[in-house]
Image 1 (cartoon, rainbow, N blue to C red):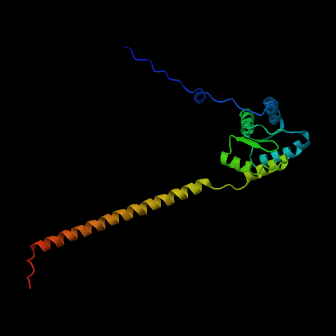
Image 2: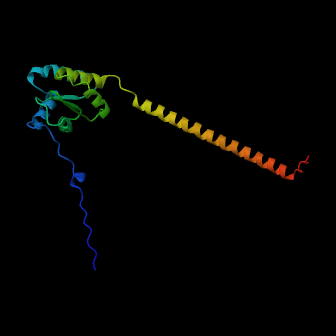
Image 3: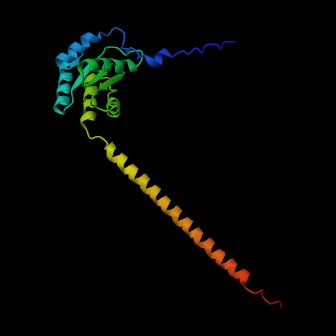
Length: 196
């Protein structure tokens, strides 16, 4: 009797990356070319104001590209995918805005900071949204490294105090036990008390 072979099926999605899902009707190559040329891919009516925002970001050390798409995609993640596709070609930080959704990518700024900036962009006005985004990126940030170090020190101090209290309690219990042993041995050697 021969054993049956064990069949193993690897989930294909776990081994292959997903293709970027960008909004329908968007020409990524033309957007990349526009962003590479001047930092903005948007309707002509707002391009000048967005160029000023890109310039302000550059003055603060941020290589920013801004993309405005005319319609909301099916999923907001499609705007992040579009930002990632543009950023993969052009680098830097990319903000993609639609009338009611936003996506971003950066190879230099943390996701936490990007999402904090995104939270300020839901204005319905791409110029105001882009300026709010830049304000967040160039504004003061929470000192996460310092906060982490302080929390580690507090936890370590708490652990040290707990360990010291435990050792002290154990020594106190040993001292009480040894004095009980001395008292009981003295009681055993002592003469019985007279009856009255």
